[in-house]
Amino acid sequence: MNIKKIIPILEWLPNYNTSLFKGDLVAGITVGIILIPQGIAYALIAGLPPIYGLYCALVPQVMYAVFGSSRQVAIGPVAMDSLIVATGVSTLALAGSESYISIAILLALMVGTIQFILGIFSLGFIVNFLSKPVITGFTSAVALIIGLNQFRNLFGVDFFQSDQIQYIIIDIWEQFSTYNAHTTIIGLLSVITIIIFRKINKKIPNALIVVILGILTMKFFGSSFNDVSIVKEIPSGLPFFGVPEFEIDQIKELLPIALTLVMVGFLETISIGKSLEAKQDEYRIRPNQELIALGLSNIAGSFFKAYPSTSSFSRSAINQESGAKTGMAALISVVMVVITLLFLTPLFYFLPKTVLAAIIIVAVFNLINFKEASYLWQANKLDFWLMMSTFLATLLLGIEYGIVVGVGLSLIILIYRTSKPYVTELGKVPNSNFYRNKNRFEEVIIEDDILIFRFDAQLFYANASYFRDNLDEMAAKKGSALKLIVLDAESINRVDSTGVEMLKERIRFYQKKDVKFYFAGVKGPVRDDLFKCGILDIIDINHFFMRANQAVKFYKTGDRKHQEKFAKYIHQSYK
Image 1 (tube, one colour):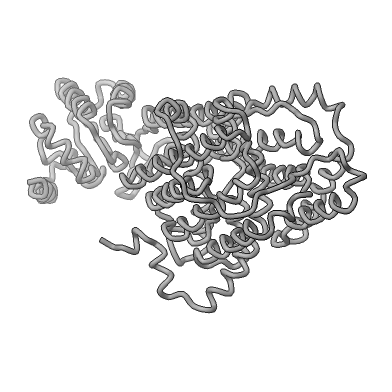
Image 2 (image 1 turned 90 degrees about the vertical axis):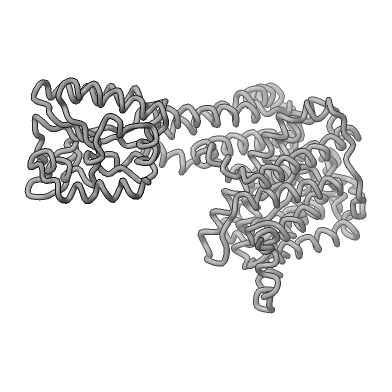
């Protein structure tokens, strides 16, 4: 057992040096500066007191630095997960109440446990069931929902909070005239300031700048803005260890939202990790290890009052751009959060909530991916509509149903594509031994008495009938002249019992019509399955060929010398 695979920190820590520390120090401080105001802001999205956003930035980061396979992914509170928490927990308790807080912490324990179990049993492949169009549609929709929900703090109006956009828009329309002028001005100026600094240089801590400006404005000119809502007192001190309280009925009610958080959190981490991985050659992301790391982060975090956390798109990118090379950058960010919790929380008393709303709105609206939508419209219409369906389902039905629709449509499209793969007839390229698609190469020679049939997918129960119907249709066009069918099986990588039985039935059918049936390019594992299922009971082993041209040559000339040598080889390899 390779202990470094289980505890990835051991891969880089023994060789850690001063040059690595310089980059990690700058990145850790930069991310920490951004993380503190974001943590406070995202806790408000989750319906929790601001301090809990900082708790999420402590233990989870330490655990991920030890067990995560990425050295640059930044773990902690994020906007998307925070909204999902608010959506699920608000149906069980009043936002901000002790019961609400305990349920949110229990949710972190549940999410972490599920992630850890999935990782231990190597179930990281589940991410394959969510295609990129689904992720794009889901992420863009959630970003829009989060942004619109923050209009209540940006404009100082108690708009209805929901994960269904139609209700938010209706309420904003009905109550917009009651907006708070002072709150709106501070909020919009904060948005403009953040955008300007982002245009100048993304490394500038724009969130910290508007936080400082907002605090100074309210501290020294608060009498002129006494109608602007502020954060007020944030408790000092570190969280104490405690096992989350739970009841079985509560766990049953939270399970759907926990599964949603598991999928979303894992997808976010893998997406970010893969994008950062492509920019370096030092390490590789391991999906199952990421599940274990996320699981341990959330489990340990729940013991120290953290709600569900995962990786952040924006902070991870800034971490990489600022020079982070290892998980030490995350540990430096933790130190900054610890210092803030112990000594600096009183400084946030005068922080306007509208400034936090501005930070969130700018951050999440950047996740709305217009470029990907435009690209898919040009490249693949089916993927475009898959993205739009997920986007609209998430907007109109809610986050939980949105991801269910996305997964469901992905599976339907997968089944559709595998049940109706590409099939074609091959023709001979003049003066060569190659056979090519007659629909793409007009010059190929098509012979009336020979059908070279190519099937571009695994052959199994879902497409066996499709195979048979297309084969029969092409054979019927040849009419009575047809004397040989060659199945070019180079693209068939798997066959099940239903597919083999269909093949056997078709071989017998054409044998009765005095039509020979040959195989070309069959892969070893597929050939093994054919032999095990009794294909040799109805067809000679000499009728298996490496290439279609050899099958045709054998049929025309009866030259057995080379073919018998090949047949002997495959017979021995099978035995």
